[in-house]
Image 1 (spheres, helix red, strand yellow):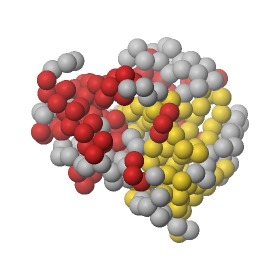
Image 2 (image 1 turned 120 degrees about the vertical axis):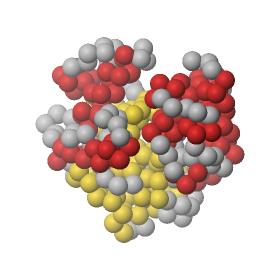
Image 3 (image 1 turned 90 degrees about the vertical axis):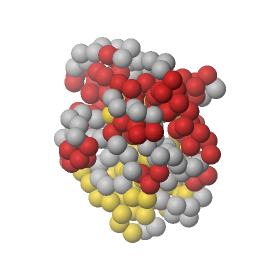
Length: 260
């Protein structure tokens, strides 16, 4: 799609990100009404980022909480693109100057060892393609003022992607029941969020299978080396400069960062 209103919506979101100043809902301002249009806006800014020399590193999955889906009136997750320059590692400082109004979520990251080219990818194919898992902090961020987002707004805004922080001790999937993976997210040494793998579409593997099939259907199949942020295991928490986060998972280890 190349309609002017889609280009205008993409430009408004890109400007908000560049200036670190949120904008109003693009759904209302530019009459973006359908998911198809919202993903078209997202794709315009993805292409612009690639043309500017940025490199894709994977995908994030959002709206994996059934409660949030019901709140927004949808029956499936959404996705956004991850870029290599969004990645930080365990123990690193994360600059808030790159963000607008950030919040943090505890997640499980899947790293693929094989391509997943088929729109009818099976669960077995997905499991065999997963090289390893890592604990992950997703730093979600919205270009929409005060986080007053609709489904269309968050999808157009690259599923409210910001940055992400990965642990550095990979763990194999073999023998793990991810529905029972417990999560504790601490901010400044105090409990900020708790959760469980079952909160992510019943099992984070379900979210990844949806993503693999969806991306293949779109002609953008997941590739070996891709990082998949599978969705929040519990409520998100706002962060500002000076905050420290520590995420601990039952069997997958921990990841931490400090915001500067």
